[in-house]
Length: 150
Image 1: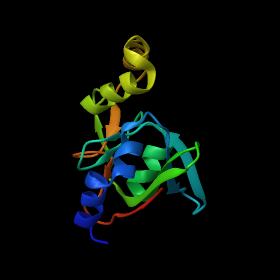
Image 2: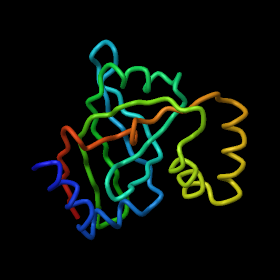
Image 3: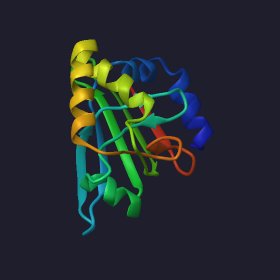
Image 4: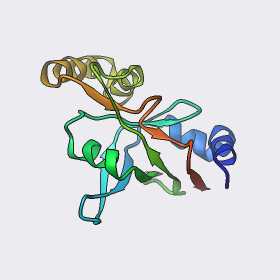
């Protein structure tokens, strides 16, 4: 599947659209420094073009992703009938002084308006920078294959 075919599938498939709109946790899989696999839960935002995630730039996963950018993401629903989405791609990390705009939307999506604002206030007081990529954290520009099942 080409990058464009995968993107078009995510943009048009009913199951993909349903899963991508819900405030579900994504599971980001990547390879640690010693070659062992790691999986961490992450907030995400689908823009219609890219799957975005973010974290403080000094977080271990962001440091490793700059060296080992190959990733896989799984987003699933626990209710029957099961629905899930898996995506593989390449992460490209960039640091900025503030959380990127989509991260602000993620905080509100996952925590509600009041909870999102409280989280963002604490975030700005705790961290002095934020990591994302030149356009977004997870980019489908080099390799991306998707599988939709429902």
